Image (cartoon, rainbow, N blue to C red):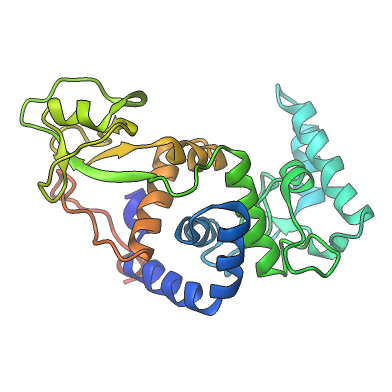
Length: 267
């Protein structure tokens, strides 16, 4: 359901249009930070539907509410509130632009204030780090985030695979092995072709061995760090693949109740 909602044909087509429209910015970010443009665009697409849905909650109110609610994360929310106000004090943003999610993420690619303070970059050269109004700043900052999270230029992030019938071997993205080892275990690419090489990956089977499988590499971990959920990283990775021209998942989900796209939900 999650993937069907986030990686539908509408988001793929819109993403390809946006990549063409902002080819110069994405190319510059790719050269400076080494992060694949399709992954940068995929984060943008999943986080705010390419800037269309950046959130309508006033951050000082949202974060102050979270502080006053108390609990084990009170100090965290207080620090985020102060960081948000410092962005205004430093003239990166106006107070009237601090709108985002109830949990403090905001801007075209949804940085929390402390991450904005640490990793946002002025990529359009106007002297401000404006991730709300400047697409260039947002895309460049996202690339900087992924680079700092350990992105390795030119390496893959994920490939779809199939496991043999009755597979009971290791799974989990942290149980990494060389592609040649996965081949010995009977794992093949989703199109049936073989695996080879020393690049290390972990195996994710989100719906069990009868559903689609994924070998995830070190760059998948960089994506995962952006929002620490495997479903999120799978969505970003699959959308990036689709934006790069790869086909939809070859193995169907093992259910007679498939996920609905946004258009189907509206219908």
